Length: 102
Image (cartoon, rainbow, N blue to C red; front, side):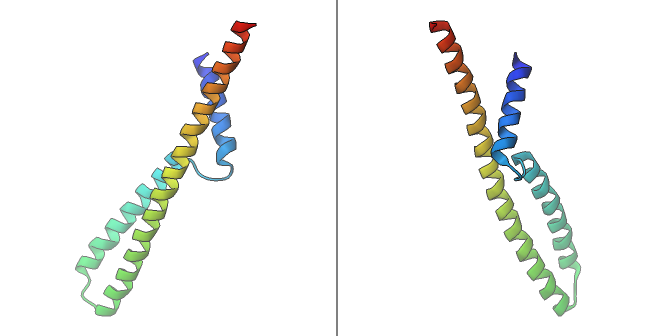
């Protein structure tokens, strides 16, 4: 029964998210971007050429904005996933309650 419930929930979540990534996929993207940002910041700290520093600063700022967007998208996906799972459970509970009343 538990596996069947999980399967129904996952199907519903996939349908609700459509082509959008799941929260865990956004987390993985954010983690990879954080690592790239850290490497760039370390390179920036060692850079002596002013023009290169300015280019790196721009890239760092862009990556920080991307991280914020990924955080927001992750939160949205997580909300959709939670609400969808709850809706599936509530629907099954109503069905069970209806069957018990009949």
